[in-house]
Image (cartoon, rainbow, N blue to C red; front, side):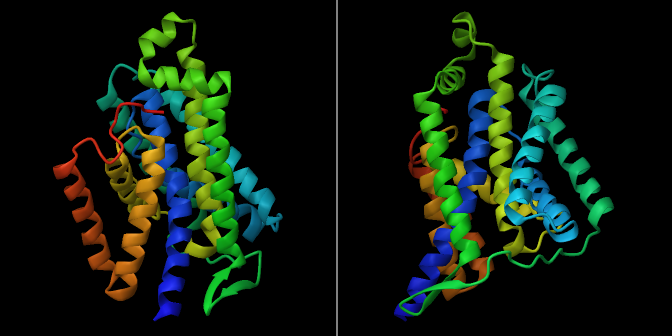
Length: 288
């Protein structure tokens, strides 16, 4: 029993790591831009398929493929900001609908380019860490380490740099930030690049572990919305804490019961939080 609990804990830490990257990126985009990006799950998918194309098909080194996935999806985010969200800045509903259209375009591009079958990728890092009978593969350890480094870097960026301060100012009051000379276009472009690239690098890092498909973003975006609602809409730290909480609950319930029950428990958890504290565990006052 001890081995099962420890193994499930390691699995939950891995799940919390990549889900934190996805959820934080989604929260950052919403906090700074006020846009609900329904295509965020497909940005995760795009990062995974960048690794499929470069690492699996063209034999690029895995880390180079991951870096390319981060950059490519970040550029997709800039494209979305410039062509979709900026023209619809004063129309959040229009931006939401536009993101759904972009979602369908990315799915179609993935189907045309790679087909609908799962893409199986050989893990670039072989081997495992054994701890009291539990196993953590090097590939999963890489995901966990990368998530910690990226999230720590983002935290320091937002609180120690002028651009980070400007992003937080835009999240709290865009009009006041503009009156202080902050360029909304520049800040939203940076926020979209960072938020999208976090989803992209999550997909790139986990590609050898999840067998990418063009529709893999569906379940991810649902989980991400549950996480940001539980943590508090617009709250970055809340998203990380909620991702850890959700990952542990979902992983343990899946291990000892089944995945369907785990999905139901996740929704029930969200409903309980909304009933007890409608603003989420951390509230929704500071959005970045």
